[in-house]
Image 1: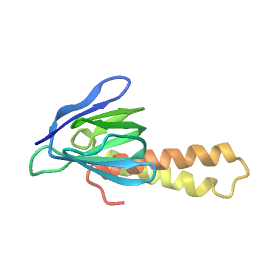
Image 2: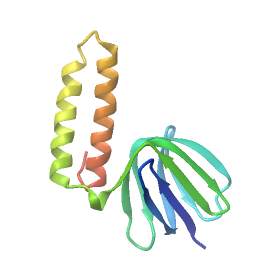
Image 3: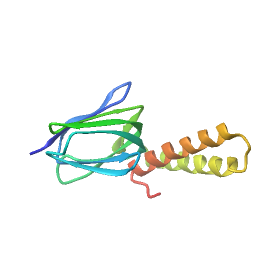
Image 4: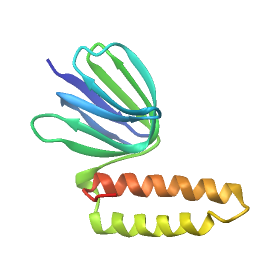
Length: 136
């Protein structure tokens, strides 16, 4: 038995297919979903979702949102998403390095909003780099 998995961002549907297994970056940690999972509604953090339609895992960078699991259907509504195979690894690595430098630079800052923005940018850059196959 398989799961029907849909990843929906405001601008497009990133994934809409059957899968054997899904691992989600929930706000409380990694969450694995197999067929016949109990109904669930969870908040998603910025991170990498992994979906296994066959033998291979496909990473998808998620930019936060929500997931609902019910009757072997996993519906994921996110602020943004990008498949790992659509991300340029070198660009993602450069973005991650810049975000990390900016994050380190603002840590001593008194500006709390600047720190929060730098933290969010670092999380997004890390998710994209990891989804592209980079190790972070």
